[in-house]
Image (cartoon, rainbow, N blue to C red):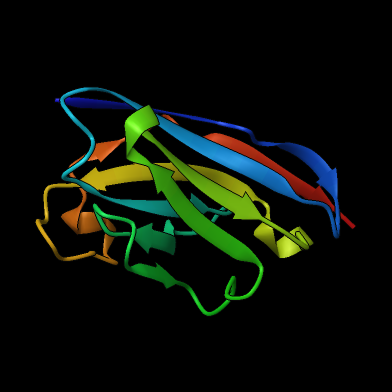
Length: 125
């Protein structure tokens, strides 16, 4: 079992930056791919970014490419999402999730086995 806790969200103005953290406890985090997803108000949960267990492979949604960066520190059991140049449309609850997918990096939330409780990001215009 892996427990995930997100932090770092907040209320910011457009153009600001935040660093979201996803801290894992329980079983070792090292062998899990990790994804960030978000759920805007009244909308479905959507993929944001994902990273392989080694950190060598990353994927991003088109809407965040060039603005967001995912990274991980396996020694600290933590995955980060640096979010820059925030826009009002980035307003959402951001969730991290871990997948027992081996070397693959899933993009679908259905392939993730453990989820955090989410952290709210609100961007004002």
